[in-house]
Length: 184
Image 1 (cartoon, rainbow, N blue to C red):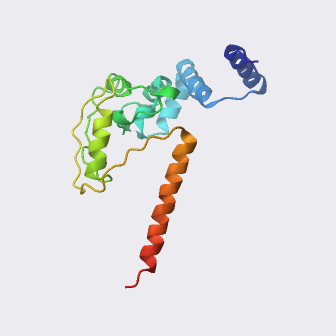
Image 2: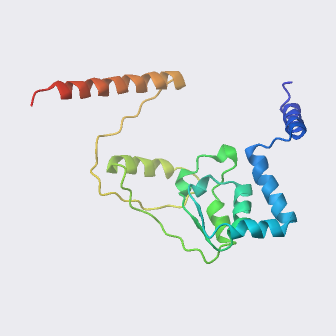
Image 3: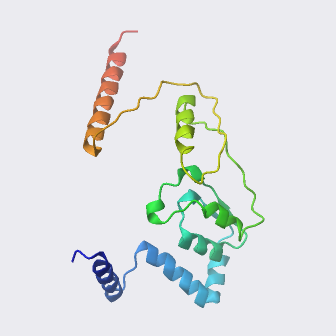
């Protein structure tokens, strides 16, 4: 059964026959239930005073639709459009734009101070993300020192990349052991 459509149909039939739901099915079925049964939707809404969504950039269209259904006006989202990495799962850059449509009163606050990374890493990250299409430009700052220079390594494949990283980890561990053994 190498035909993807046949495989998908067989999977869907199996789930239905066994009364199973996948993650996407749970979202889709909840949306359908709330559209058909407003009493159930209202009861669900009454259980949540506030809804907080972290990593909002990773949401897809169906998840945003579900959020709109159950959130009312009491929703707070955190996310960074520069970190949309789940495009393969349906996450899309317009999540933030589409969020503003039903939640017009929402305030947007840019968290522009990076406490985690060195100035070198932040600068490189901004250069890389600057190449991505449809990105909103942001000025990010850090008070951290420049740190070590970055090393760019070209690896032939995932296995050679893993071997390179393993070699670096071993060198670092050896250095730590030598530092611990050094007197005084």
